[in-house]
Image (cartoon, one colour):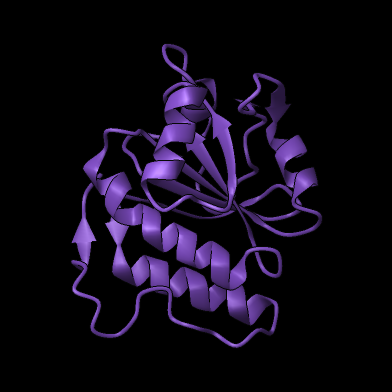
Length: 167
């Protein structure tokens, strides 16, 4: 299981075209940025609640402080449709299909959404499951501070989203 401060597992992912990549390959694509692996299922209500905030995190900090990678536990077609239905995500899509869930098992995913931040050196630095307004805000502030960027809210003041929802 991938815990904060442990080495990231050498997990296999599929890109939407079916090409296999491993954790190290996804990190290489990030060009020296940490990668936030966001495991999800298309029919998960908590994933659907979290999705717009992952997109906002990517808009605010993607390319400069983090590379967000959605990891769909369904097939590629379902993942692509989900990206379109829930705001047209601008970040990477990878697939970890049933029945094996090889990447999910390697990362110790017990519930979705499951977020694992992996440093460019391949160490897990942060893990959380479900939706947490506090965790999402802390993540944004941490990413901004690490790259000396101005922190901007991922969840706007007055946003009526709940503080927590289990996955």
